[in-house]
Image 1 (tube, rainbow, N blue to C red):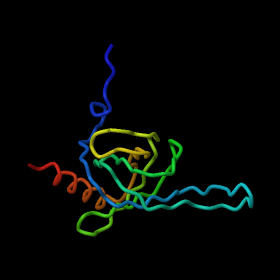
Image 2 (cartoon, one colour):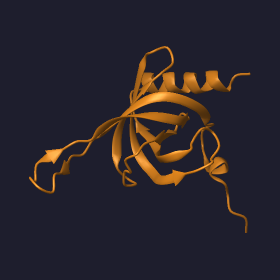
Image 3 (tube, rainbow, N blue to C red):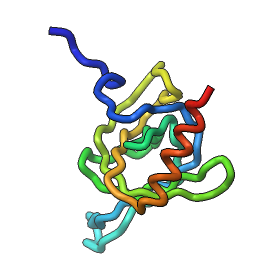
Length: 129
């Protein structure tokens, strides 16, 4: 039985995209020293994107299942927001589609219909010949 590649399992076409992205945790974590809740936020780079998710290069590993606010900055400067769930975290070396380095695969699980439609139009525009 042959193993199905990740490209074959994807529901949506994925395109290489070098976009600025801010990722923020939604649920608080607890500081081990003080016990106080805190949230993480960091500026990262998106290596590829689709209507259904994105690969985000990050030095910080996030646990699969973790929910994030994903704020992409499109090339025209406009922001695009979606709620995502970390599908996987791993080190990707020598990969294709601009996804070298440590990062997370984020599945988009929510967002306004307008924002998700803009994302779809952006992806479609990159796929056009």
